[in-house]
Length: 230
Image (cartoon, rainbow, N blue to C red; front, side):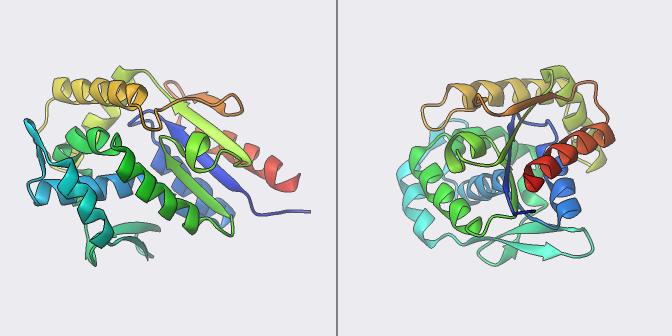
């Protein structure tokens, strides 16, 4: 007998978690939630309202603003996935820019911000049938998820992928800057006190340094179908 399950996909930045999660959700007709986009939305808000910069971070004002911040998702049939909205505005493109990437790990390390967004994430997945990706989905948000995937790849491989993506979007970045950003985010994500990035014992490790997107998708889809049939 088949049942709906929760699929938690965690891992390092630029490992293709979101792309894989979207593919799996579409194949299973599940709801996809990009938790990283939620933290990026808060980061975008902080930058837009001058609450964070290289030498300034007004945590208290940002934490207070959380109660009035409306973060949501709307499905875009043309693109085939849900885009993130902040206070009614589509910010899908804005949150993917390098400026947001430079500060999102610092924003995500704030316990009060994580607590607020985790509560939203759990509410969304009440009826299961969800694929969710992020940094702490299997360890904190859904420790009892039926399928946990932990994705990784070497920093250099991830940087090359991210650099290509940014260049194709027309951003003016250097490969060196992208490598530094990837390593910086790894350090912050793994060492933060609030919900650090870890691989849980029951998570299946997938190093996609030498895997094609198709190979990775087929591998995880097979694992998901096994769990659903149990």
